[in-house]
Image (cartoon, rainbow, N blue to C red; front, top):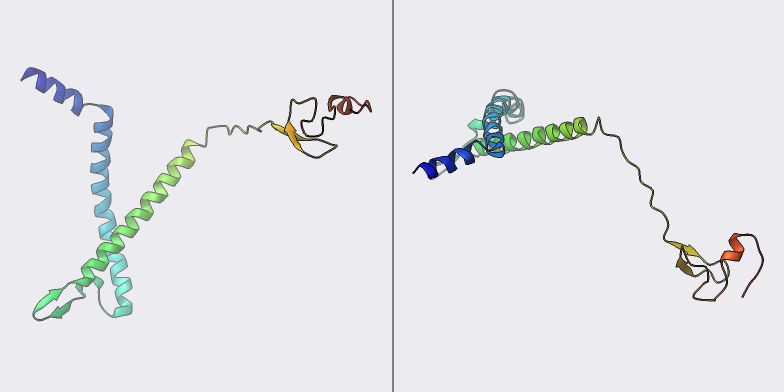
Length: 146
């Protein structure tokens, strides 16, 4: 039993588990703010179009109430939550890359073009494999050809 409790303690106090727990708690508190914004601000404003609050939109079919207004409110909550999380992640990425220096690494060319046959050849080649022209002499200014 001691070993089990020790393993549980190691698991529960790991950094990732604690980070996840903190994220869930903050997410729940943040969800309450978003729900209030949707239910108390956005739904009444959108309800001006339908002359009612969205959460009270009900369709009655054979004495059964289908509360599609509540569903629309939940969809609006979801879209707003996703948008806000997107903005938060985008902002965090921008802040994390603020102090970093962008390394622009230009890749060295690996191929060159033969000036005689215009074939693609390796950059280190001294003779063209297509037309067998000597390439080193052209680069040094000599005018020898094969």
